[in-house]
Image 1 (cartoon, one colour):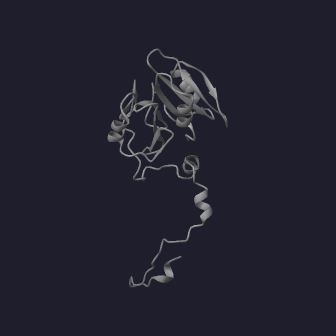
Image 2 (spheres, one colour):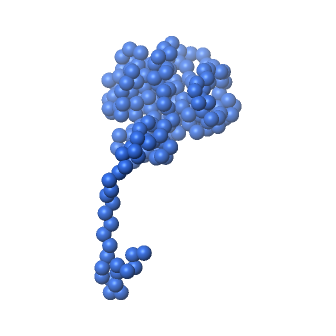
Image 3 (cartoon, rainbow, N blue to C red):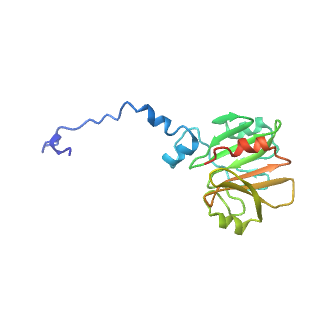
Length: 192
């Protein structure tokens, strides 16, 4: 298609300007994390995203540990992309999010929807049957749109929930003590 713009001696050329006036309705189509993930499969180039920092080991998810102060969480991860209802949120390089919930001034719950952060070999994107096979699960709560979570039955001071939607693992949540229903709801809200 560009051949008419070049001559045999190598002269001529084409200038392409990659500018346009975007349709305002396009931005409205990706104004939630769920919609962004459907349109943009990989947010790894987002400068605000952080590296996952490792898997789930006991009370630790990546570089964050249950019980540390919010100041220490921020010093390890940097400023969150969003903070609302006592929950900090960071996007992860690759895909997914890391969320930290606070009942007081300490990290009481950590949720990850990052593919690289697994719990006993179970991670985001795995089939629900794999989670059932690898973890001792009991029924949690049924949510909207075919979503629910399963409770990992374990002894100890911290607990783990596995979020399932459309027969796939969507998130893992590690928490200590009695996690309030309000904090839990804000942590798992709109996780893609």
